[in-house]
Each structure stands twice: as structure tokens, then as C-alpha cells.
Figure 1 (cartoon, rainbow, N blue to C red):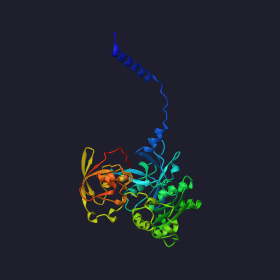
Figure 2: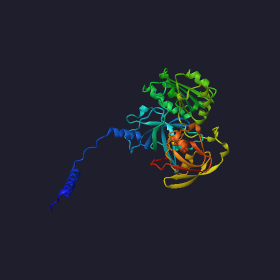
Figure 3: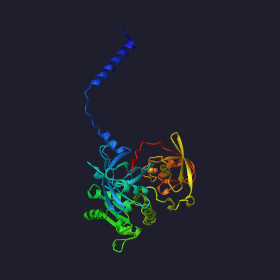
Figure 4: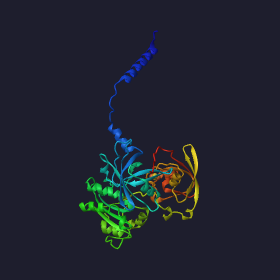
Length: 409
Ligand code: FES
């Protein structure tokens, strides 16, 4: 049969297409071409990845360092790079309750190169149920889900002066250990003085290691250990980290940037001391410390609400659910307790990952860590990790994202 005009062209085109398909089917396979840009961006932007614990060291009676490498079946080919001072957001599933916690990376950025690793140094807090679980259940070979690295407490020469005064308390020494190692290997050209507060001598984390590194580079690194309840053998400074001690060991505040990392109580105490030194705010970087252990200690918290329980009506996509919430727990914790997963990283009001909409009701927002943008405030968005219910609430949270939480075992 003869085919004319347009129909003839179409028949010709489909014949060519059939031939192309045949050629494609019979083509010999070629080796996969590596795309370095794609690989790099995968490494930098993967939301969630798995690590394996390869080593555990007891650093003090209440502190352990976990060495983590890429899990054998990880999608990543190498560990994401980071800057000394950043943290990983660890995601764990404890008996069905999915929680995330930020932990500073205590190893140096150069340790991730080659067959690299991260180290997380975790201290058991007296009432920290997660750290206690991790302490008991994480073993060599355990698989851990994380995201990151995240965080802003790192040295940036466009922003910071290259003389840093670090103020650390408890496990807040961990980001400084990373910075000190980077200075010691001459990958970071900085002068750093760390004032490190611990309760007892036995609590001082990395005492010998950091003092050895400081001894090798006395012009670059100084670490001053301060004990608040020392034994009679203690010859170093004692008490809390005051303005007077800061001036004594760090010298004049001019020409220096201050990095602070420690427990909530230390921030509360330091605030007055810092004010008395008149350090401009632009020269202070505070590491986020996660949620406060006890929000009622915040002087602005309305204590008359502390024993109350409220209902939160939660909208997620086209679903709706009502949960119970205590006035002294952040909205994020109440959601997690009810088994509702909201993606979170900093848990300190800053990163915006848990950003949600407040449809109705009243909340207390911890203004020390209120990282909402002006537009969010205007249109009723809030961060559940830094907000506490003061009435029944109706909220809309982002739809579930695929986040893998590793069971603790
Ligand atoms: S988790 Fe970062 S703002 Fe809530």
C-alpha cells in the first residue's frame, strides 16, 4: 500500500524510531562514567546517611568517644566534609519514640579524608535519658542514622577575628577539641585560648591530650581548666567562669572573637559576665545547646503554667490528630512522644527545620533561642523545638519526610 504526504512522514519517523530502539538494545554496555560534580553534591546534600561505630573509648567515667565511619551499605562514597565546630544530628528510635539530638564533632575535619571518620564525644547528663540509652546500648558495629554536618560555630575569616577565646563547659569542650587539632596540624591559622569549666577534676574531658597539644604550640593554643568544686589537691583556678577569669587568662577583649559552648546553666551564668565585659554581640558565637533541660528556670517562663497539660490538634497533610502536651515540654518533644516525626536538626530554634504553622492557641517562645525570621513571626510560623504550649493548640506541621531513625541496639 502506498502512503502519501504527512502519513508517509509519520511512517518514516516510526520506522527510524524502531531502528534506533533496536540499535540501543544491541549496543554493547559501556562502563559507568563518574560524574564528580554529581558525586560531590550527593556527598554534600544527602539528607540522612548511616554510620557504623568502629571504636569506643571511655574518656572519663561519664564520657565516651565514639568513632564513626561510613556504614558498609551507605549510599555515600565518602564522609561529608565539615568545619571544626560543626555538629551531626543523630536520629534514633528508642522503643518506637523517634528523637534527634545534635552532637558536636570532636575529631578534626582532616580526619574525614581517605578512609575517614568522625568522632562524637558524649557525656551522660544526670537527667539525659537519651545519652544514658546511647551510653549503654551503642556498641562497636552499631549503625547510626545522622544528618549534617550542620552549625555555625566555626571560624570564618570573613566574619571572625583570628584570635579566638573559647568558653566551654562540660561536653562543650568537644567542638574546641576539633578546632585545636586543626590548629595543631596547621590547617587553621588561629590563636585560641579556651577557658574550660568542669565540676570536678575527674570531669575534665581530654585533659591530657589538650594540654599536650597546647604544650607543643604555646603561642597558638592555651587551655585553662577551671573547677567549680575542686578537691584540696587542685592547684588551678576554681569557681565559675567569671569576667575576671576571662580577663585574667584571655587578656584584653579587643581584637578577639568569643565562641561559647556548654550546658544551659553556664549560658545563664555567663550572660551577666559577658555583659560586664561589653563584648559586642557580633563578636560572640554561641553553640546551640539543644533544648533547655528545664524551661521553668528561664526567668521569663510563666511558672503558673508549669503543671498544666494541653491538647494539641496536629494537621499533617490531609490528616488530623490530637495529642496531649505538657506545658514544660517543647511542642517538638510532645510530637515525638506521640510518635509524630518532625524533621529537626539543631533543636535550638535556629535552623528552621521544624518550622510549623500555629493556627490557634498561645505558646511560650524561649526568646534566647528564637531564630524565626520576621516574615515567619508575622504569618504565625513557629519552631516547635523552642516553643511551649500555654493553651490548647492547633498546628500544621510539614508532611513527613523520609528520615531513617536507627533503633538503639
Ligand atoms: S530543629 Fe532547628 S529550629 Fe527546630
